[in-house]
Amino acid sequence: MAIHILWYAPLVAWVLEHTGLCERSIHEEWTSVELYNRHEFFYETLIVSIVTYLSGIIPRAILLDREKLFELAANNAGTNCVLFSQNATRTLNHLSTCIPPPTTHANKSPNQGTMVLLRFLFDFALPWLAMRQGIRCNSGDTLDRMWQITLAWFRACGKTNYAPMAVDVLYVNSSLSAPLRSIWREQRTMSLRGNTGCMIPYDQGNEQMNKEVKCGLGAAVAAHLINQYILMLNGIRHIEARLMAIFGAVNENEVGDEDEKESYYEEATRTEYTRTEEKDIDAIVQALTFGFGSTLHDLFKPRASNPFRKGAGVPWTRVDEQSADMNEYIKKHLANPFDVHPA
Image 1 (cartoon, rainbow, N blue to C red):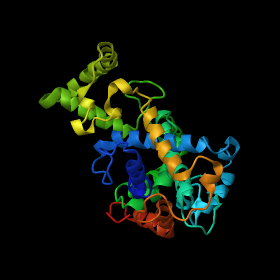
Image 2: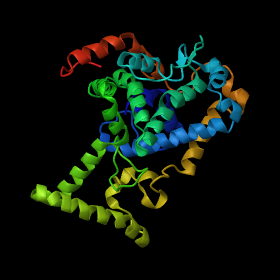
Image 3: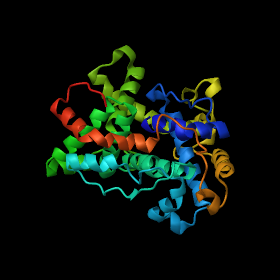
Image 4: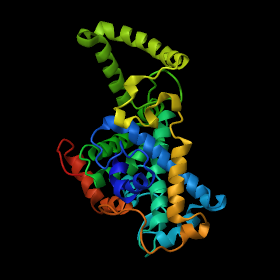
């Protein structure tokens, strides 16, 4: 949700306008976490599309050299370009955690289109994908790093719950003894099915199981019934998808209103791990090609204006500005952890 708040006006609105992708379901105001799936699909598609577009123009050697890549994009860059937000490193210093210092690409050019794409990928989108993969493979180090990075995201978005939570998580992690730290790293995530590589966060597991138990047992929720019901439910879930596939059925519970039946919700057109579609990727790549060109010269040439819409501040600038009082914010929260205070 933080990425959506920061990037809707500077990038996402342009993509929706020029492609029509998810225009009925993706809006500037993201009102409920229950809408996460549709946003997840959109951002996965957007990330794949941008990578597809850039990799089709930029030679592999440059793509693998981040310094060179940002140097070429300097004509489109902002005034304080870093591969990861500067405040992330400052936060880690405050809490005695570890992360390589950010690489700075300073310049004096206005923030234009190509650098917008690169900053979206390197500062936000790729770390988000790394976090999702870190959850699936139970990589505690990846999750710790993302708490460090996203603290400033949450503050920039005014998230008064998640910003303090990030401080709490980092503080607790840095305070664990070596034996407890080892256990925590090994048991950082969980699997509803017991399948390695399909892990989820503990809070998601609790919420999912609570929802299913409540729906199944209704008013008869009791301690001696829960485990038995969960065992039965896991068995049913194991065969449900296979039976529906055999009979060509679609789970109507996963389909939204008629106006929002987009490709993401159609079981027949997606699998558990493949949610993007070639036609959606092609649409975004075509829009980017039309807006930025199809050659290396077109992509990195100086531009008179930013092709994308402008929002309330440049996303990476809004994030980096949080470093000014990050130390004070962390100290204040740790001194009064139960106080509700602005991010």
